[in-house]
Each structure stands twice: as structure tokens, then as C-alpha cells.
Image (cartoon, rainbow, N blue to C red):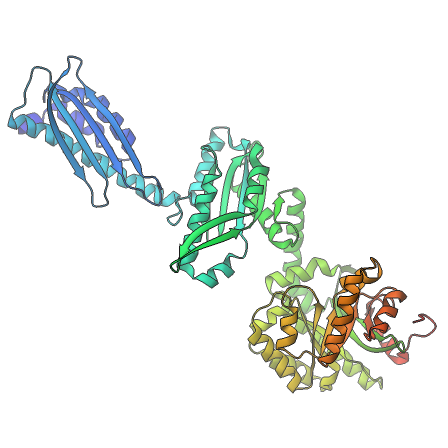
Length: 565
């Protein structure tokens, strides 16, 4: 036996199938090509092989194949030699082997045949293991979709085949998944991610590709002509899953950044484009789908420049505080004001909408808010020292400050540094309609009230949590959202008139003062006065004023001969 197994033919057969780096399919093809080398030695008439691999995260349906590896031209006997070999993970390879027609194997020849089957099984097992390892580098283990590496490799292959320009790339970010994960836990969150990935896969054609980048982020390569169909389908995907012993139904929406790939584009550029597009989609509040354009690149470059310039601008005091008066419409006297920040850069004003939202996103707003508070306190002290009675100045503070447990003390430290009376400062909390950390809000409001500093919220009436904010906390001042006033006067909305009238009444009964912002016309002022909302802010009286101009207003205090209420 040993002399035959070590024969030149067998060594050549073995060398042809044991080559490292071959896939299971390539091993099978090598076996087909090489079995004739030893078929005469082992009297082989026919060999059939059945391969089975169970489902894995990389192959959700597993793999099953049946093939004839060899058949002698003269035929084969009916006598069947059968062997099945299996692995610890449930994979198996089964062989059905027949002797050549007219021959019957003896025991020693059967050992030869079994030895050949074992070698083929060993080579297939090694190839399968290598395939799994390779796929683990290119496939996301949780979902079975491509990983980032697999996505880039797939795109690179399409590029080299001259096909990449036929695709649209998409970057998908599930909306509010952090909230979902927080509610149901990471383990159940993974179940939803799996179901979402399965739904994504079900939307694709055979030559379209999906990948998970990690967390709640996915990418797609889909045919250009199907771009809008897929985008519409992604607007809401229904997921049915089971956790906590119960069936759950979720409708999941997503933000999408898209790029129509052009001739010559390679995958790094494609990823940059869809990353820029999804970044813009996250910034927008009214549009979840953004198609990449060069304008996005220009805007992001502009934002990056602004973010980079921020530390220098703070250090060089390029930010300037303007003051917009709050006026009592009953006597036209200034009774307060709001501090509004402007950025004077190289002699030109940078529009607030260009930097405020950006600083909200990157956290710089906290530094800017304290900068403004410091300047306001500095100005109030100057006015007092010059013998002019200040009014209460509201300073905007982002909800991001509520993540800082020491924010109340830091506010007091700034105010006390200038030795001014606390009643001249009002802390106006912004963007509060979707804030849910009520403990942090309560702590800040309580600390301010205890120290004689007024607190207020802006844009009351927007979002679903405004009423909760009023019932849970006793703010001193509430600013009505401009949209209500516009609808009453400009659109003649009877519904909004009733809402505003009763809103003001409710706030008055709660001992809260009301300020209407964005007041631009005498008709608006007259309506507000008629419902006992007497304090207004807006261009009807004044635009935001630089400190010098506002100081002159403080000296006279009263607007005369200008507005009839």
C-alpha cells in the first residue's frame, strides 16, 4: 500500500489539490482535473461528492453542493463505497464511490479509496476554514453584510471591471437608534440591526451590495436607475422582531447621503462623497435625503475653517455682543434686552446661522455662551459705573450646558467676578423642546432662582415637551415662538389667536412673565397688548444694537412718536 500511495502519480495528485489559498470550489475543480492521475491505480469508476456547510453570519443560507468528480468512460460497478466526514461546526462532505466496471475492490484497495477521500476532505476543510477567515475580514459578523473592508474591496473590483460608474453609493444612518438602544438594551438592539440588515438585503438585486460600517450606519452600492426607488423604500422600513417574550413592530426611518459615481471615481473618493452627503443630511431638519454636490464640499470646507478659527476668535475677542431691546408696549419703555452674539472677522460680520449651529454640534457653544455672559457682565458694570441704570439682560445658554453638573456655580462665578446685582442677569435656555434630562434642568433653574437670577425658555409652543417644562419647572419668563404671532396677524388664523390668548392667560396664572419675540408690526403689538402680553422684542422697536448704541437707548429708555398702540 505504501509504495502505491507514495507513487509519482499520487504525489502529483496530492500536490495539485493541497495548494494553499484555493477556495472549496477551486479544490473541487482541481480534484476533477487530477483524479485521472490515480484512477487506474485505485480502479476508480465513479466518484460523487456532496458538500454541506451550515448557515453562518457570513452565509445566512449556508452552502450545499453535489457534484460528480470523476466518471470512467467504460462505466462503473453498482457496488457502492460510501463515506461521510464531518466537522465540529456541522459541516460535512459525503463521498459515493464506485469501482470501474468489471472490477471489485478488495479490502486493501478499499483502504486506498478511503485514503483518497480523506485527503480530499482534509483539503476541502482547510480551504473552507481559510474562506471563513477571509470572509471574517470582509463581512460584518452581526449582520452577515459586507464590512467596510469588504465594501471597499467590492467597489475596487467593480472599478477594475469598468462597472463602478454604473452605481449610486448610499450612506445610511438610522434615525434615533441611540434612543431605541437605550430603551431596549444593546442585545435587543442587535436583533433590530439584524432585521434591518435583512430588510436591506431583500431590497437589492444580485449585483447590488450592502455593508454595515458599524453601529447604526450602513452603505449600499445600487444601480443608478434604481436610486430613487431605494431611497423611497429606505424612508420607512417596517421591522418585526421578538424580545422580552413579546412581538414588537417598529417603523425605522433613516437619513441618506447619496453620490452618483462618475467615470474614473475610486472607492476612497466615493466614501468621502457619501460621508459629506450624510453629514449634511444630519444637519438638516426638514430633509433626510441629500445627494452629493460640490456645494456640499464648499460648505463643509467653510464650516471646517470656521471651527478652526474659533479659538483664535475667542482669544482675540472677535465675537461682539449686540443688544436687542425688550419693550413694554403700554408705555414704549425698554424693560430688558437680549444679548446676541455677532462675529466680526476681518472687518466683516459672519452671519450667526453660519457659526451657531456648527458650535452647537461640536460643543464650542458652551465656551461661546460663557464668553457672552462675561462680556454682558462687563458692560453692565460699565453702565452702572457711568450712572445709567441697567435693565435685565437675557443671555442664551445652550442645552448642552445641562451636561455640566457645575454650570450653575460657573455662572455665579462670572457674575460675581464683576460685582453686579444678580437681578440684572437672565439665563435663557435654548433649544429645549426636545430635552429630556429634567433633573439637570431642575437643578439649574432651582440654583438660579435661589441666587436671584431669572431663568427663561425660548420658542415656547414648539416641540412636544414645552408644556411638561412648564409643569415641572417654575421658569420666570417664557418667550412665545414667533410663528404663532405671524399666523394670527399675517394669516388671520382664528385657531392660533385662541391658542396664543389662552397660552398667555395660562402663563400669567402660573406667575410667569411672557415675552413675544419677532414682533415687526403695530398690528402685532396691538394684538399682544390686547391679550395682556405687553413685553415685546423685535424690529418694530429696534434691531439688535451694538453696545454703544444700546447704551444711548438706555439713557432715554423710552421710544416716543414712533408707534401708536
